[in-house]
Length: 251
Image (tube, rainbow, N blue to C red; front, side):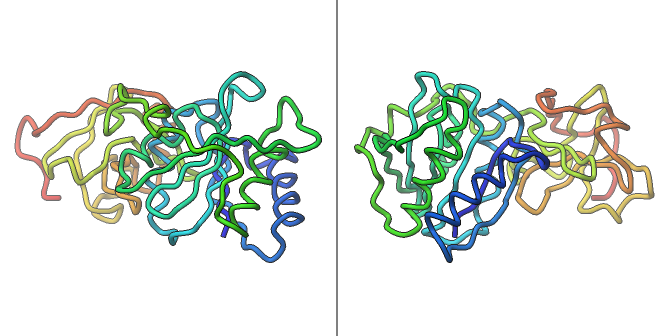
């Protein structure tokens, strides 16, 4: 299958045009819309988000990833293979966390070019055709490059920021919950939350954080929008407090 991860938004022609190219170049291959509201123009938080969402997909899946504020500039177009999954997109750090958490990694610089290449829409004209090629024949149309040339060694293993706001107003962080204790408090937007297992463990309107289905620490309000009630947005810092000042609630 080919999986789409972009910041195109849920409206407008862009995702549809990309899928038209995929249907033309790889007929019969399933196309999955994973996400079209990745943090706009922001490769760094998008990298942590992407890495958290890929585990449900089998090996040989091709991820077409477009968060590309440098489109048409001097950033390279690349293919990365990580633990048997393929990633096509810009060289701007978008695949850093996927690579960091993989056991086996290879990379290529895309040298293939279409007859017509828009300066502002490489997702449609360059990345989509390459993703279609990989879905049919896993031989990247480019030259192998050292993985080290792509790395962002200064990025942390976990990002203590809000990286995504979902349709319910829940605020995902770039922190993996397994690295946080049951008594850990998370502070964001001037509000501090304690850990609970799930929404029904609190009354309506209660704010908390929990381990979401992708393994990330997520700040939420039961039956409410955490982004509005707590004033949270993408990029907001998250402070980690290891224990509660008094007795923590039973989580």
